[in-house]
Image 1 (spheres, rainbow, N blue to C red):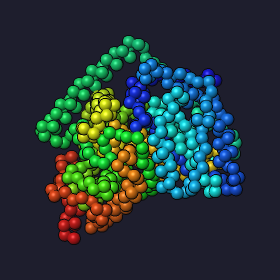
Image 2: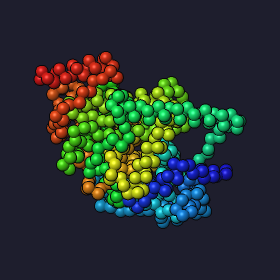
Image 3: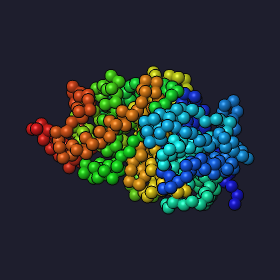
Image 4: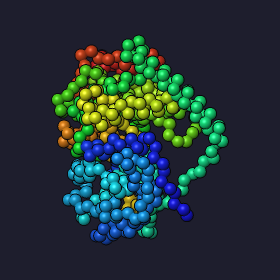
Length: 501
């Protein structure tokens, strides 16, 4: 079977390469925890390492390095053989079960750039030579694909039942490309022109509405760009990373969403918001206004069934001023749906152009080392990657968890990525550690925040004050005409119960 040729480099691919620096590498990664089979040999991990290291031939894109001119990427070119001493490595640490120490070890590896003269990926086995649990840390350059593509590729190496048969690792697996029937050239040209004109018109409407919001004429629209709050986590990204991983029972998240008429994303946004406010207070920072998150927004119209990517990454205002976790959730829901409504009233191309425009400005600030001057686009980025719903195995090793560890966005902040796996949300957090030594407290605060939010549904006396949340002197009203009558009545009832004790 003929191996597929390298994919062409898009504008976005080239952007990841051009803007990469030692201070802000542009790779994404995952930390996978695995359990050996019962009765495994003492050298189990070493034998697995030796087995996969024999595969020194790869398929695209894992056999591709970047050909560049004056540091400008031109294309991907293939290599005949891989340097397996570089791409696959074995590490021994004291205790893999010490999650804090493991996260710190991964953070050290995550801050190092991939070798630009080689294919842009690495596979690290991590074990302690005494327990039946080991880890694999994988990092791949963002040029090779988006998060969904990378997850799909690496899942190919995991199976539904344990097996001792030999296997082909992900970098050597042949991936068949689906051929699409192309329309005639003149039709594609006309369709492209029409899509461009529609997107340009809608993009102009977006900017006009944002201008009206700047003048405070139309306040119920998505946030203005660069309206985030400066914190110890934002600003120019420096070298060094802090990483933390944590698990949520995703079925509990879903059930809480049903009880509060919220999506799982909205539940988690509220939880992360409460947690990060408490974390920032540990560093002497409280705020009189809401923080902001960057979130991927689905641009498909209701009922539309299409393949491919139709998302935009836009800022969403979070909550503030309410000590009742439920009322903070209502704020988050309202603000989140304002942005979704804006996206539904514009063509997918318009929101894509808007995302590229705003992110390009942020990247320019980063390249010029001026990210400390403007306000950040957002204070955190939250993304959700659906994973397998059943238990998976790497040969006969059981996959216990798969924690995404992403790259840093221009302007800093915390990047939080979760992947659902067998009923659990595996969450990876990463930030620049120039002012923060560890993200472990944030992970713990988020667990506490979820418990508070879950409890407050039945107990209106529950308050985030127990976590040290700052209280604004002038609480912001969360009631607007965009809330449904049912939701508004629920909010009023909750506030009445709180007031009467």
